[in-house]
Length: 398
Image 1 (cartoon, rainbow, N blue to C red):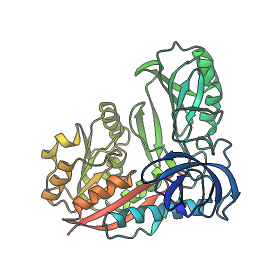
Image 2: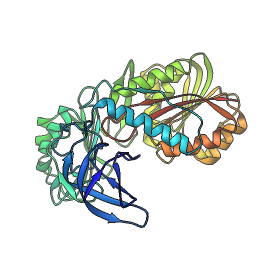
Image 3: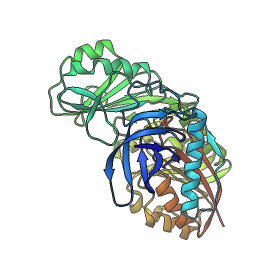
Image 4: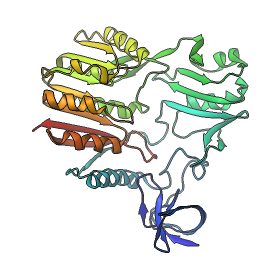
């Protein structure tokens, strides 16, 4: 059956209608007319896959990646970057409006790199085949290259079969010097480790949380700051956009005395904020990340930052009204409700909320709006060609 695609949904899928029932069609573009096979028939909606594009949309372009139509990684490589950015603005504003947040986002900050921007990739290994999952599936799509990562990672991908992993998961992390960390989850015995060490710029290999070669960390640089990053510590996947995030932190922490950074990771935003403040305290649950943060303050000669290893919900006594700014950069699950309540009780003047999940962001904004007003929301295209987008939100006490 032929379906006309009307618009994108919040996951980057095309939306059409069949007998007045909504149908979601991955890899379609508004304006497409497509022949569709029904893959799911639910009470309130349908899902379908494209059998043939009958008439392509004027917005459609050919994706550079040969795996795009099958891969579950990228969502929007079949439109222009201008359309991708417009989609993300529209998506966030629709979500804000649907959850009664009275704010219109106008700015989205572009990445200077459309491709080869990611410093991290995670690949699945099933029966010695290496790749990504197919869209909406746990079936493996074997790949030889990913256009989102640089040559150092892609060159390693081509050699990964030599490790002789039968089943498992391989994460590759890359720093500013193109040094690589390989993190493996598999009970299989590895082969040809010496070959990898001689052929690639590998600083460490970690298998099942045990370092079997080199170090379990590397150093990377963003702007004028150097960071130690352990293999299991969070770090933004796009160095170029991380620089732009740092600029926003600098602009919004000028002349502040005390800053509290919750979910601080290896101390990136804490240390940037410390350059503008008298004192910054960072809180993080990951022990390795806090050890990194303590080293990072030393190597960057920043004396006015301290770090505590703890779950944020267990440090409510640290959230006091003598802080001028609190920075929130939580995981996708958002901020613990008790933490938000404590911030509101203490009437901290400014909240900077960095989020990769707009749904938990608006959930938390609906709690905060009782005492806070949104000063600014900017989007950062941290994840080019995916439906995901980073939000940078500044709130002021009413």
